[in-house]
Length: 414
Ligand SMILES: Cc1cc2nc3c(=O)[nH]c(=O)nc-3n(C[C@H](O)[C@H](O)[C@H](O)COP(=O)(O)O)c2cc1C
Picture 1 (cartoon, rainbow, N blue to C red):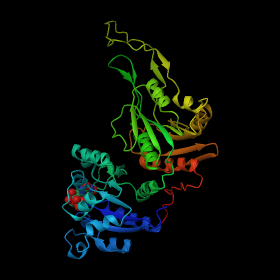
Picture 2 (cartoon, rainbow, N blue to C red):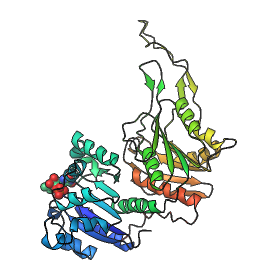
Picture 3 (tube, rainbow, N blue to C red):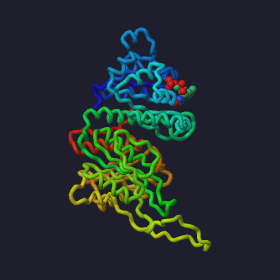
Picture 4 (cartoon, helix red, strand yellow):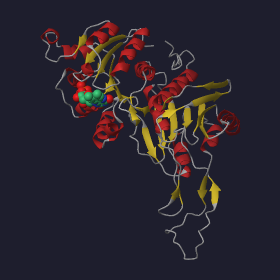
């Protein structure tokens, strides 16, 4: 799919730059041509010689190079590329990009380009969590840039947390997703995606909720939109940036989520990734409940919430052509998910183990099993972004059997 495509890879200054050497190799294996720009910081971590040898091209480093700029090199490099990839994207380069700086070759190209840009941030977890970096990242997403990662795990600085650059094959999958945009296999298809938790009110200030962050559902909405679908994202309370190119309907309760889904019909695709509360409190108190001094806690009477997945799966007339549910399980994951698929009447179930210690709820990684009428597939542990891309590609293949949905995160053998 990326055969014959031209990637301009900008390598900035982070330890993860060593992974970009492998990324070059992976892209070349798939028939893409890769041209590289090294920032001053990037050149401290990998040598121009390694980058040139792997990319089989010159390496560009200097904005004021007389040789390159006699042909307006900073414009030409962007013009000749189908996609710009910044991997690793250092905190410093992201800050420059978010603020429109153009004081070296990389930032000038990034400011001068009209091509899609994918960034793969990588940094120490405290740098990533810093409000300045978060602000810059949000600005870049709002500017329409694509992003993959960072994931969580052991960092080169010896700390553990978010900030680890996505693996080369995950970045390759994101590149394939963006470049297949031109084919837009889901163009003309409408999708409803639910995401996040629901809040079920107890009284005006208290509610029942769960630990869902919405990361997986939001990533699926973005991945479907990247493949050309018109997406309505029905989102429970979350702290995520709204994905670009997606219509977002913010709701709180399961009742509101169902109503928002119904009003977004008709749709070809429904992906129910939200962690909808099974129960709500019967008779929400109109005023804040008070302790009455008796020492007796109030009894909360629970009633069952509407089943959004089952409702969409069993619609009489107007059922989406493909309904995908999620099963968050803490034990015998696949067996429970298989039963859930039959019970709800949906087409596919994506089962994930959310048990204590897996770190799935709120985390950046997911290990899923795709359960269909044909059987089940065990996918490797991937970043939630990568799971979303793989799922969106499978959905595109469902509607167009000729579409190549292969996602080779398994083929990491040397
Ligand atoms: C050993 C070392 C490791 C570093 N790792 C990172 C990193 O992973 N991510 C990052 O954003 N900055 C990292 N930095 C800081 C950047 O290299 C520094 O901000 C540099 O100016 C970035 O240059 P650039 O704008 O060319 O990317 C590191 C610095 C050192 C000395």
